[in-house]
Length: 317
Ligand code: 5GP
Ligand code: MN
Image 1 (spheres, rainbow, N blue to C red):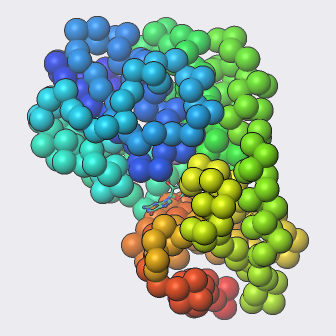
Image 2 (cartoon, protein in one colour):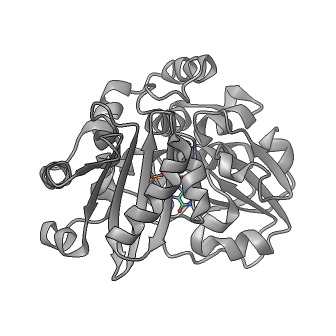
């Protein structure tokens, strides 16, 4: 796909990523936004996403995004959904649906068919940001700001080139991107590794209260609403906890969940590959990748652990 060819006649372009935006969601949306602003100067372009974590304020142009989902037009000429199927772009879904032309760029295996009129879904890609790099036909239009946004997306979805979704192609793209000269060590430190004191405290608490089960093959931990309120924390403060749980020796599948309502939890799943967690999450209406997936589930903590365990156990047998 050449994204410029797809959108060049559009007067209005909307861009959205998934709810609870992570680094790849923000990086891919902003990288594409900055690029399209450059190559389609006459078009009105709007990014509609939820407010991301503060660490992403280092991306150029992010101050132009308002998070109120008030569209510049009810009917966009083109609407692009990134890093997500259309049903997970939240309040922007209706603008996607109403658009003249819908484009979906994603790397989630649970969205294999794509949900646009034009789809570029590559489950083997490390990140949506890698795919945005792919669809930029004229690479000479890339500048340091675009490169930085896409690089942030790639480092977040690959765990700084550690996860198995990192391919030689990912590394080649990353090499190309750092040649634009932004301060990548600082970017990695500030957006990926650095935690606030409170974030580290919650991480510590989640590790302390974790429970091993299935002969030590699985681990689970949970943070309830009361604890979140005690630390004055929101969902952004819980990023990374599930990956740390997964690093426990002997564990093949980690579950972390936080309470979103009386009987509702947002569940994150991570695996070392022995369990396909996209399959587990999809069974309950969520999705993701083989080694990293998520879903929102109803019930008590114990109900949810029981339901997840049954699906995980099926695969381990
Ligand atoms: P996380 O656990 O970090 O929220 O998400 C892990 C992966 O699963 C990400 O690629 C994310 O986009 C995907 N994911 C998380 N929650 C959901 C969900 O509720 N539905 C779907 N389809 N994918 C999800
Ligand atoms: Mn992604």
